[in-house]
Length: 243
Image 1 (cartoon, rainbow, N blue to C red):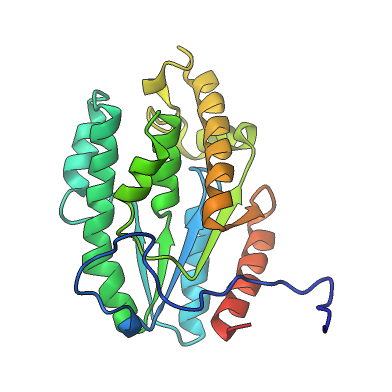
Image 2 (cartoon, rainbow, N blue to C red):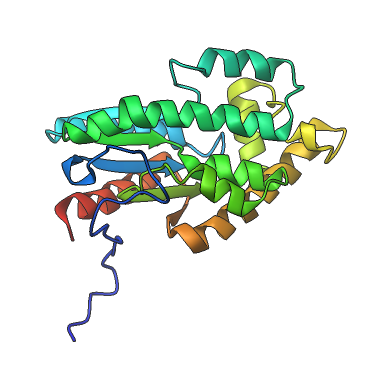
């Protein structure tokens, strides 16, 4: 058997379009000719920066792109934002709010774009939602059933950054920490800084747990933006070429 060069990147290929579970009725998967590429990572991981750079690179290479992400649904995004400001949502209610936001984008943005042959770049996907819910005590079988409507992406890249670095980046960018991204609703600590570190540590463990079942790629996000971008370009280039 021919051996691959040790430096060659091997990107897992999706041999056919699939849903993770029951899917959406009346969707013909064979018609979805585009590609769904997901970049995952916590706030401060550089995720959104990389998405913007990927859009420019792909469109300059002749690929039409569409972007999706959390809380971008025209159906519930504003209501979800308002509900979170009160900091009183139960864990299940918060989960279902985000699931509704995702389902609306899936049906009305992701599927039509894939059908038109676009590359859909997702600034986070169901994995962040599931990881958050796992940390908040929801059961994995229930979450897998809830997100059984999701399409399996063609490529998923998780930018892993240590919590101590994440907190510094978040403070540098926003000069404050977010209540929910700090897990303050979990009672991990009365101090938001300490709670942020603990919550993001738990999130990383949840992502590694999900990685075993969903097979996405974990990239070192604790590097320069240029270095991360070059690796993403190389991996996505192989994916688009069908290597």
